[in-house]
Amino acid sequence: MAIPHEFAYEKPETLKLALQLLSDHGKNARLLAGGTDLANQMKQGFRVPQILIDIKGIHELEEIRMAGDQLYIGALATFTDLRNSRLIMEKVNILHEAAGMVASNGVRNRATMVGNICSAVACMDSATPLLVHESVVHTLSVNGEKKYRIQDWFVDNRKTAISEDEIVTHVSIPIPEKKYAGAYQKMMRYSGEDLSQANVSVLALSEKQFRVAFGSVGPIPKRSLKIEKLLNTEGVSTETIDKAKKMIETVIAPITDVRATKEYRMHMTKVMFERALLAAMERFKQPRIISY
Image (tube, rainbow, N blue to C red):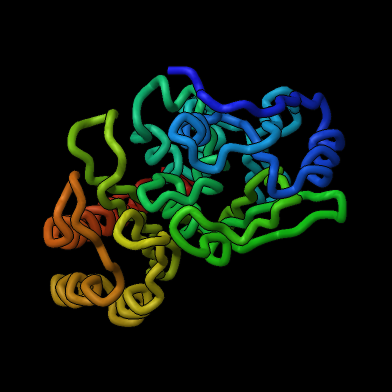
């Protein structure tokens, strides 16, 4: 299906040129990376730009690398890149796990993780793994660099904290010094081809500490500090799991739509939370120190 709208098109070869184009055109410009979400919006006539800035030729944005204790994921790294990366598998396997559940092979080959968090749709897969890993979003404009904590990045459904003249260059993930392990759970209608109806990420850290985040059950993904406090102070038992599952009712706000009712989403989020928590704990017991 063709896009029935006229717009200018530029494909800068350097980040500097892309930043200048964005600065010159502001809110009238849109960036094209993977384009899986943007193309659909434009076909439907939503947010059609006067100029489309294609950044796929800026190869420095493709990198996935370690720098000290930080893992850097470039803005053009696709979900297939994440699945194929040994670094992602070993250092942030919870994200590796989530990447393999994104849509279909065709979508994973084009869609980028950064595009996923920039589109900020409620059903995105990558947000909760980034939340439990306390990631940082790095942006650049002609005025310089900014950093956003991932918990400050999501403002509302399809809205982030980014300014109109900024480009996300990469996301950094601090890698814990001590042992850790995590698990990702996603509710979908059938394997590999559906949007997330609900998802949960749990990260188990040393000294019996946990981080928990929920996605696709509210306008923005949410990390639950009160559930974490319960687990971190009282430990994990049948009783605390039951308490935590009851708390979930006050943390998330699922809706009813064509894919699931709010009641079913609530029920399954509780089920997935328990599964993810127990899986993370089991993986934590494995002998490998950094990965799982």
